[in-house]
Image (cartoon, rainbow, N blue to C red; front, side, top):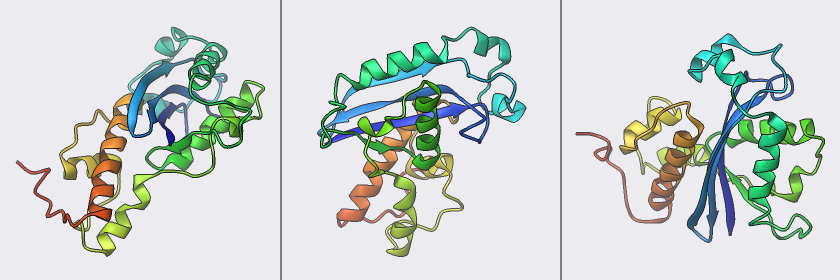
Length: 199
């Protein structure tokens, strides 16, 4: 199985009017991470940048202007994907994986479109892998305590996983660790008493 773990940082929450400024992730082939990537880029649109987004991402307009163009970033991203997936083989696609990955997928689809490519589906399938959806199931099965919320930082704190929140590469590395922990709890006899993240 081929899995593309990815996370995006953006200039706002609207995937059409706002843009990706960082995409980072891990390429996993048959359970092994074979490549790590971290691509920073300028937005297509400087006229609709949320000040709150800049604050969350700890960046400035000056810093954004120092990044490569989104077109250059797109080429770099595609050149990485093509090493692992045949875009003309319908059975050879990445599973997209991430935390609340629907948000990231929406931005990635529009990133392709803004680069005049409507073939997102040549690279990734629609079978999303997302640990966020496992949390309520594990709470329901009483395999984990009911958490205060399901924010990634909260979940990482519970499991004792280090994270530098709102850095795409740190977020996605932590997401993969969370997923592995949750799957072990889901399929095994292990029960989490909440002690791993304490002390």
